[in-house]
Image (cartoon, rainbow, N blue to C red; front, side):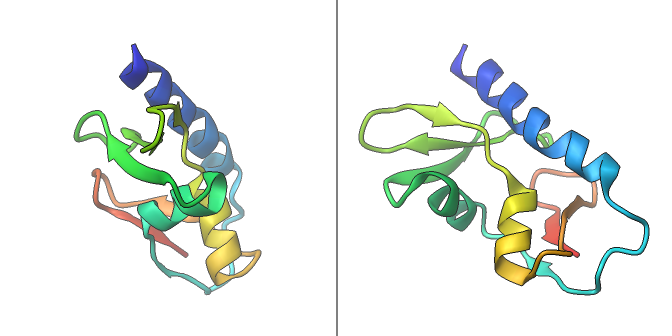
Length: 99
């Protein structure tokens, strides 16, 4: 049940923003630390976890109480590399980067 709700949270955060990204995205970007994305979004007691091997299987989990939440990688990219940066995926769980 946790994995299903986490997966839906990740997809809900990522899919609409990725589809809405303009074709001429700013050239800023680089790697993504999903752990850091969880820290930025929820706080230092949160860690990254995944429920499978699909690109949308990432979620955040609170190490002190087990609560989970969806991770917003577009927000991470914008905060880390600038407002024009968005998350893109090359096809797999580990293929996320910011452009």
